[in-house]
Length: 221
Image (cartoon, rainbow, N blue to C red):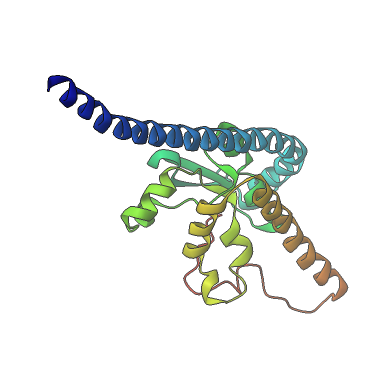
């Protein structure tokens, strides 16, 4: 009788143990894929961010000197508190100009240090982060904010599904090296296309790259 009960108990425990082992294996597999993706993304940020910073450094130095001479002050950087990876605040520094997107390029040191990624959701202010719901707050804390992102390159279309919040959520779910490279290519193509169009039509007024964004869209890139 005792042997029969022990056998039945072992048979009951076996499926539970197998299910637990399968769940643990699946969790480990997801963690490994996430770690590999994060490592590849950070490697791309570090390599490409360092190269871009090296190339842009002379232009940024000239721009900073010009701003200092023109404005008569040394505070050529705009300093703002933004929320980064893990919900940690950091001071975002950028040049006080949007010419040639130099304000964006001046944030490259943040990419090298790991406070920003090349591609990611826009870095939020503490007040903006406080307004997020629980779901958005969780996935945002797991991603570095970006120098540019899907919302920044798609928010000009005016389509209802191209709202920045929806685009950021889509990026969080589907981000990868391929999507990052496509977004970077678009980020370069858009200002180049605008500059070439202005050169072809000298003397004609054009809207700036911030004039035709959706109402209420933040320019924090």
